[in-house]
Image (cartoon, rainbow, N blue to C red; front, side, top):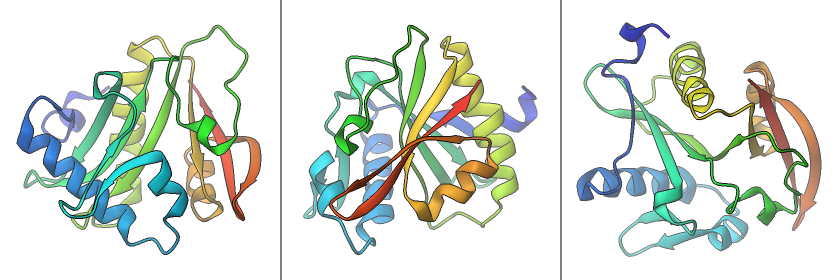
Length: 181
């Protein structure tokens, strides 16, 4: 992993640092509050409309949030990872955990902020491949799981994910996808 690509650009959110945690939760809210249909996602995450924040229902000590920053230290992209098999989010979509003893990471969310310059090449190369995937490998993961909508499926397929299962939930299609490491 090239150090120049990661140093200063990619890191994890420190939930014990109040300002850093609040900044993530506000970006999380802005990213998902603009969606038309929020009924389901409001049921799986903790929404605080007064504070305009979203947090996870899974205890924070089990979650790792990765962030990618631009050259002026603005958070551009976030990805939430979960390594602890006692918890999962994809079951809320009706998907079953894989029958394997292999360790895996579940992506809980992936979203951009208003600072994103639409450069998907850098997001894939630096943030996804050189940072998030390497972090999962360092944790001993053999693959990464995530759920996505049909709108984002093409992007995930471009990044090397494959569709494991597709389900309809409350009239909406969701895909369980996997990236082998």
